[in-house]
Length: 587
Image (tube, rainbow, N blue to C red):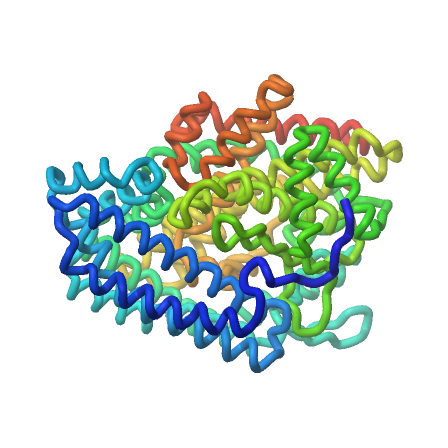
């Protein structure tokens, strides 16, 4: 695998800035052409309907590329005023054009069943799932006037999340590190809560929790607005039975599947109690404190160059399936990876596959740590998923949220197993497992209990409960997931105020648990079946978002409505914990 370039090559999107500007004009022209066809859409004219769909697909595909170009330019240098202005301009343009084309979705949803059936047949398999999903929202769709009013309402409603962001950006968390005063933003908190010094971890947490306790009235009332807005639209206007049911519908998951997942996580959470005790022993404390949850437990650290990381990831992927390695190599060789941190560049990591036929773009902030290697495997897994699904139109190209982490998490586990197999030092083996299990707790148990908290918080606030009841509900979810394995300071009742997803996207969090636990169960099957499992996983990935998650998994024999399936994921985690226990000699 060659290194390629440290920065992105944008020619897969547009050859030049002039070509990008021309695409903006083309989007306007495509919108006008679709608007002219509005009065030609008739149930008895499948040819015009199919022509409209093809034109709409062309518009959506180009819009996705335009959005990606503007966003990626901003992510590579958020300090650039040109990039800031360009992203704002594109966001406004696409919002305006989307509103002008809203008529199609409303027309399609409101067609009687007997009128829609021949049009659905004429559209063919390429558009079938997308069109069926639009119609599945028919019971929850209002008149065109009401839908436009909700769109306008949502401009103000989104201000709740934006206000939360503005407040968080202004907050400064001050504490002492070895006698020296430190003042940080919330975005920098993880550096200190993951610190090897327990005094630093506690000081950082105490300062952050004290700040958010002091701001609890403002942030709590802001959250109340989010909850009531969600309830007003989705329960009172759109007719969903519960607030979470609306999110389940967006994820195309039956309520009973989400209920089975949350029940399975509650049942399996004690698996981590054993892990917390092992980690306490590794840290040299009698009982793990919540302050120590993400403390580094390994005694040995190892660093990697980017080239070494690429070699290890490619080797792990090739051992599973040669095509995985080839697709990963394509991302790098096409110079679609921005590797190293620099001023102005967005933090974190992501894989952005904007549209079919465009090799995804990866953003990394590689610094040579073991976690950076795992991140590379994760993001390349996302890219592989997108490349395997490239035969679908832009409407069904992206996997639905619950399945979006399949390839990425699977890729991480392939790398983890490869590193464990080649590593001889038991301390380094333990480090690999500690990292994996810390991530598993944070992604599976923590996120599922976040969802449980949201369900209760939405109920409480809809009934007019005081904010103190919400704080207490959050503390109870922490007690339920930790049991007696973790000491829990009372101040953590205010931790929920620090979670942006609660404000930005209600009930989003359980999808993380779904995706991660799903992959643990699938990986366990892979270990049982060997090479015979490879085509099964590739079929799941190649489907993109063209089939409902439950139907797609059922085709391969996986019943996610049955809690027993999710137990396989916890069985995998229990095996990992047992391996770690043998390495560190915990009793």
